Length: 337
Image (tube, rainbow, N blue to C red; front, side):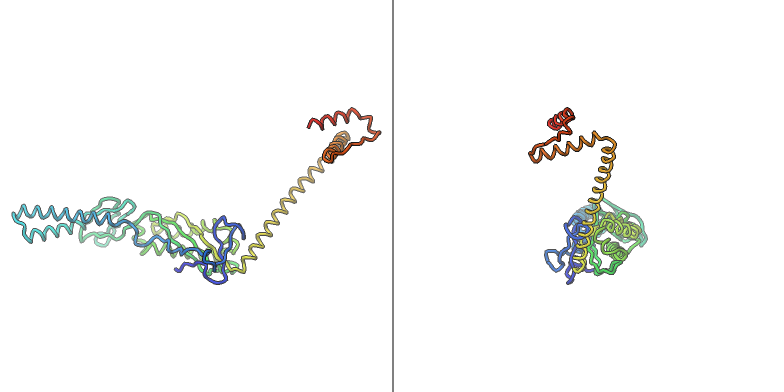
């Protein structure tokens, strides 16, 4: 499975859930720009040969070997009354048998033990014992969280747009027995199941769904991989889309579509505001139509505000001088504000 890094000519990359610009807040970059290329995702994979510190078990085995050899030779010397080659050979044989009998497992390890080729038990963590030549270790399962990177190269969406997608799946072994008995290599099985699920999901979605609704795609991939991996004793914790590479010629079209969508939303908001203002004006008109005093008060208020803003002079027609008390009261209220 070859990881892509956006090297194919004519492609750009959409990275980061919060990147600015582009459709749905995605940032589209040139895939030919070395600074924009994603790292080799598979280089982040948890290795099949677990990076467990084997020195602890090796040191313990060495200790068991030396201790068993010393005890066996001491007993042989006491029984035989002499330190000869046979005592040393017996001590060596006992020591070898001891290191195949007394073992230890790390806290995160589970050991699958077979007896005469059939499953017998799961051992660990800590000290455990095996019967030499009768029992053997079939699997040392690491139950820590694993990381597997996977991708889909030039996979067609439902609207026939080729895309490259980088993703990562976090998983762990929850049942060591199933991981040993139900699948030959659960590392490769998880990787293949993840890649197959990614290609299938992309093929059923449009390019806009892939680039915009990444959270939904993450959840869909997790459910699909979990459905297969659960039978292998593997639990999928999460799936994360890291990079999306689309053809460069579509970048401008998607950016234009996103801009048009934003303008549409702005116009809808403006239309809603104008509708609310019109409704309030209509309600005010009905009030003024039924109450002339309220209409005069509103008119004088607007007139007074205009005079105050322009530092002008208010001239009252003589026909309205009969309402001097009203205007005096109105002016006092305006002045108090």
